[in-house]
Length: 566
Ligand code: SF4
Image 1 (tube, rainbow, N blue to C red):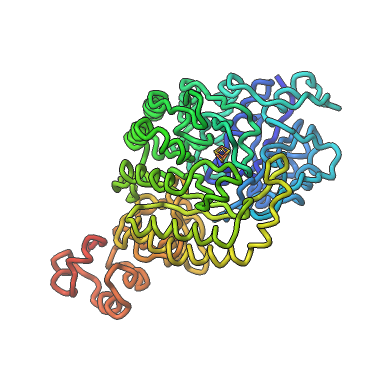
Image 2 (cartoon, rainbow, N blue to C red):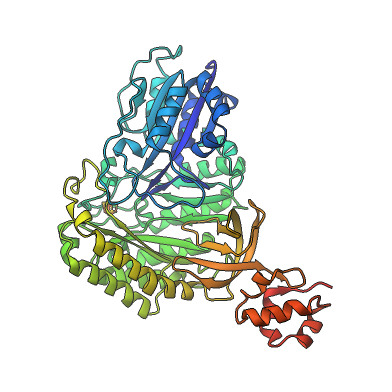
């Protein structure tokens, strides 16, 4: 047994195929916790701090760090986004965490690939000034495991070889590290990101992508994933996202010679069914990442897989597809995976299987579209082609849950590195086009996905700001909801959708207690203006539904949103 304690500091990760910003907890944290346990640290001696908790209680954090035998800091944003209530760690904070530590200091995660604050800038290797910090060049969990093998005293450690961990190792560490979720500040409301495999199965690789660094796809056996889910469930996990893979449709796909491996529907069936058996009372089961090229190359197998997902998942799910560009010249110049007509067909197939509205209030499963700008061969025409493609999707009555537009972040080792001059050259064009997409495509699309009056279940109230509460459902790419009042934070509420921003909705609590509701809630209700809201408010209290029907104009249209107590 190890003496003393270990600390894992979560600086958060955000990668195309791995999410770890709260409420998510990435597999890295759980695997490291498992590796520490395997090396003799009992559960109670493994501390877990998110960077937000370090910011809130720096003195407590410093005290723990000072006495830790080993401090492991995980970080790295390869696709940085905007976050509602969490801010990923910055270089100054990394320095200060390590300066406060006395034991072995290890830094790793996707930050090993490079650091940049935002998309559209090349990532550069992080310059850590503290010379006692060991930077893991490959898998941090394997590095931590190996460093502890020969260094029981933990003084002046031998540096092990950098390596990737094996599928068998994470089978063990994933299970043993499941306990760590109980130490997450958001527990029990944490989304566990689940890994099925790494490494892209295509023969050619997109110019900007870091996934090929992992080599051939290393599919985890279904039983391993299920055992990990089961361990997490026993530790109280109820929210899961199968997000750590480049293409969920490619799980255990067979290489039969083409660019795209042949999907294996039975593997997905075993996975989803097994997860449901292992976690019968789970509240969310979502996915991430689907390759549109897989869908068009193998439509029958993919339909079967999508039907399995819809049968076993929870609604509000998103199949985010890396389209990257609708410009054939850019697609060819960057070895992208699918032509626009193919992506269009893939969007249609996902709509066919998933667009029915589910229990969460959102459609069961919708496609997402990811577009990347600044790629080689981009011209003014690229922006027009991308815009036209999206407009065509909107006009064709297909539903898309989310359009993600970013400028490429070029990482060392990718074909894009050193060739991203178009990012700055086309910046103005990019910003103008993005604004047009937000206004002319996103907003009307959102109105179709969640029309006024839609009831969204279990929105978690997260931030009160300027008398607006911002909340989200737990899930993959959750929709941001603004409620026009301060609400009790950390609680779930159902809401009625009343208005639409470009990428968010406004809503009021459902059912609305009409006798207690503030005017600003009443006037938000679909079909109600301020004047009518004032009239209704002046007539409160209503004794019951009949009283409301008798005394309010168009009352029958409103009753479905209301609760009326005497
Ligand atoms: S298809 Fe392209 S973007 Fe997707 S994982 Fe492979 S290389 Fe990366």
